[in-house]
Image (cartoon, rainbow over all chains, first blue to last red; front, top):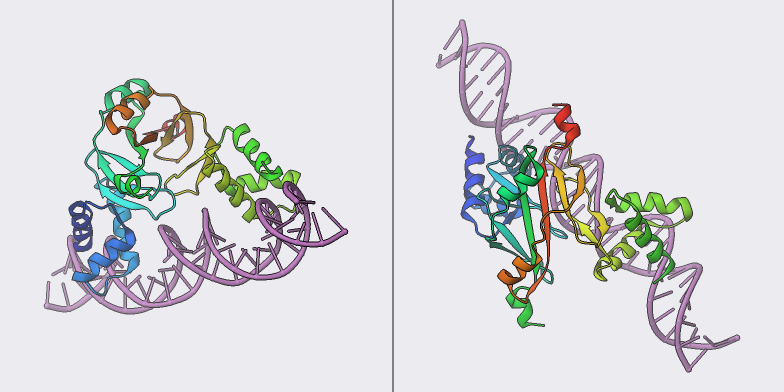
Length: 120
Length: 120
DNA sequence: AATATATTTAGACTTAATCTAAAATTGAAA
DNA sequence: TTTCAATTTTAGATTAAGTCTAAATATATT
């Protein structure tokens, strides 16, 4: 693992906030002020390919990067904010239904987050 | 409902292939050769806001639009192709876990599609 | 028919992400 | 170590998806 790969892996894993590539760049520049945007994308993609982190495509906002550890997400329908959640595990059930071709799943639960509920 | 709203609603509902905005435009131009890209986006977004269709954010490809009727998706990890699927319904269970804030959910199941399995 | 409201249009603009080709770094072999 | 190949980084250009703008057109209301 290269230095940047390690640093970016750590940033994504230590953050609880599903960083965008831009936010990773911003954080990384604290330590390495000259690092380029392309390096951030290169390494984020490499880490995704290696399944060391995962990419979350969220509607209407740039992709976000998340730790690989299995968990689900709550997505606020109003403000778009993401929150981690742990719902009942579907792996076994889906594996049974899909067969050996099954790899993984992604469950997004849409709701109105407490802050938006308050301000409505 | 305006004429274009209706036409676009029909296209999305009659297609089994999760059309992108560009594909909707292409289809629509068969009937209305002068329709503009902005009109397609305007109406797709209006239909989404009205919950008459839904948007699928898929990683690495443009957003796709789908009928609203409840169903899940299989996503090929290799080629990215989407296929419809019906897995056990989670609505009740999620509603119980999330409470009244719950709105809906989106389940994507990653796998290797039969064609990719063949060619590997 | 007159007027207000909503929709459409073409094209400019924005944003996210990728690509490019040169420079810098790393690592292995001699 | 020096040499050479392979990898990584860089800055900036490019691409692609989607939004925005403001004028023109169409629709609805009185």
